[in-house]
Length: 59
Image 1 (spheres, rainbow, N blue to C red):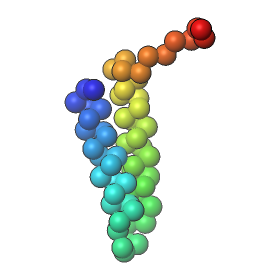
Image 2 (spheres, helix red, strand yellow):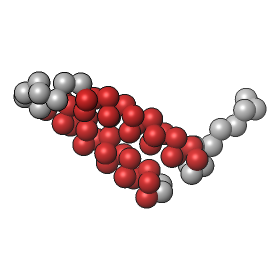
Image 3 (spheres, rainbow, N blue to C red):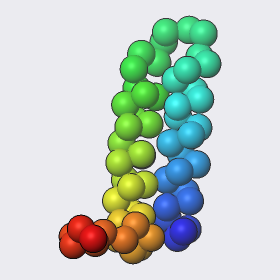
């Protein structure tokens, strides 16, 4: 896993934790939206780093 992917994974986990465990509603849905964005970028970084192999031929 690349350093970029690790960083995005950490950011996604931290923003999800902040969104779930914040008691005040001052931030709104911003941490959960950030979690979704970081998770999508994490999956993109994995695909670019070729850690996910896609085989279009079904065996």
